[in-house]
Image (tube, rainbow, N blue to C red; front, side):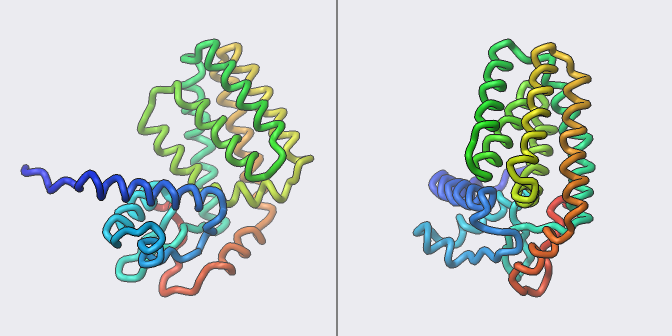
Length: 241
């Protein structure tokens, strides 16, 4: 089979740059679930044609961050409570599995680095700081698994639930985060002992607690849906494929 034409390097670089900036805006909450992304405005902001913008949006769609609707447009992906619950149930299986595979491969230096990262999570002074550092800590804890396909799946699921983790964090406040920090401490103890089964169990409990707390607050999802722009089709459910 003859391969298709390759994307020119300059256009590929522009697409990746646009995707990186939009990804950062979505994950940080600057662009909220349900918000429309207008290609012409993005192209103007980046001084680019619409072609690299379209390619950037396709990258973000594969990341679970953007929903594209043919002949209609692009929106920051959103979820309802049922979809978020389903995603967390999947994460409760995949994240612990990935961690279980990683723990036996840790070096002492790996554990030292993770302990330092957890200390940063515990001492940050803002919700956004917590979200960024907590995400970095957990994703870094999975890298030693050496399971690239599983890691990519897990990272995508983290992307799709980011906004709702933000809402959850605001909801529980700093007092609630003390439990989060305690769980990190217990995980680090299992890392130091290379106890993969205990790490797996703790990660499952860590995620389950968030899922159950979100289920107690459906108003989080109602507010998201209410804030979305009106458009011909509701771009929900990035986790549904």
